[in-house]
Amino acid sequence: MGIFLVALISGLTFQQSIEVDIKIVCINAGYCTSSAVCNVSIFAPDQTTLLDGIQATQAASLAFYNVTLNSTQTVQIGEYSVGGFCKDGSVTQLIDFSFDVTPTGKVLTTGDSILTTVLTVGVFFMFLFTFWGGLVLPFKNKRNDASEIIEIEKLKYFKIVLLTLSYTLLVWLSNLLFTLSISFSLLSQMTGFFQMTFEILLAFSYVVFVVTIIFMFVLGWRDLKLRELLLRGLPAR
Image (cartoon, rainbow, N blue to C red; front, side, top):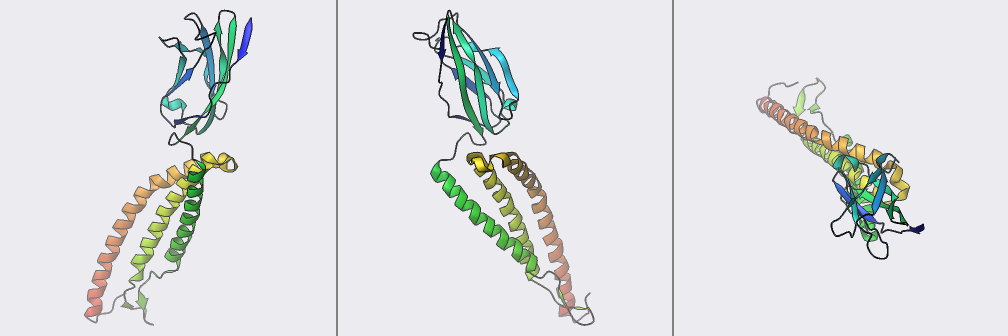
């Protein structure tokens, strides 16, 4: 029996949560015959068995075999392992390669990684600046010793805008960190955490924006009434 260890092409990258078609080339002094059989197993990044020794489907051209993962089997981000064998008569060909799954179906190049890193640092400092500004700016209207409102604090609206902007930047920052964690082994163990954080923040962002708009509308209406009282010289509390 002849045994050949095949080094199939690795470095394939597919998009997360889509159907993936894996093609396996069987070689036996040319393409394998129609009687050849390929059994394949595929393991997720956490070593969960997705396909366990299933028989791959041979193409009509005999040029390759294929197995398919559905969209629910490609949810995890990371490196998937493929193993098994193809047997054609007395020849057995071992299968051993891997492929990657990323959110976009692409792997960051060195230039993209540098640009994303610089952007992440920039967004981080922008987040700190807007969050700090939102905290330190005044919100309450100015009062006299009798606790009567004497002036409407207009900076309160800028305070709200800065805090809302800081939340938007935080969502963006979590997405950038998620992207970087896929490409840098130092952050790879945090990929799941960054992904979950981004998805939670993104889901709440719609609520934050709606609540902010309603709050500013109510606040503006209230300040308009206060302004009318102040213009008439009436006390306002």
